Length: 205
Image 1: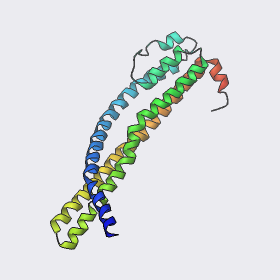
Image 2: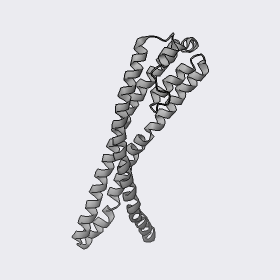
Image 3: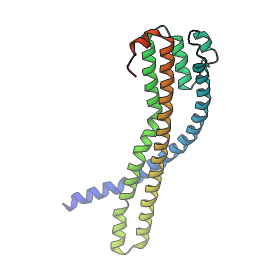
């Protein structure tokens, strides 16, 4: 039994370095995500103004006029899909396919935030528990320096892991609201420009 517990101890202590490395990597990704999040927010503000102008104009009987002003090669999801819906306005099946494709792409955009939300606290907890073994050994042997060092590592990994999770959670919640609003706008455009889509989805929402 002692051999088995020693094996488990060696495995757990051996995981400390990989856990710390992955935590640092995720922390850098979280910082990059934060910068990209504010850039995404600014682009969304412009896209929302443009789409709302088109929707408020009510000129759905003139798709050419609706397409005018929508960038052809925009990297902003709602603008790109609004163009595609207007270009395929006479094809109900294609519009349904485009709306589903938008949901898939939106979910893909949320994947990093979702992963940070889950992995940050998990790795932070692992980084907390792993050094506790050596810390207790140091306490038992009177090695205060080793105890202090391992406790420092434990607290640091906890804080970094929670920070990563918080960044992931906040960006995920905000982006989910944004994409939901975008989907509502796109479906409204689809309903207004395609009579078949409007009839096939009547009473669903």
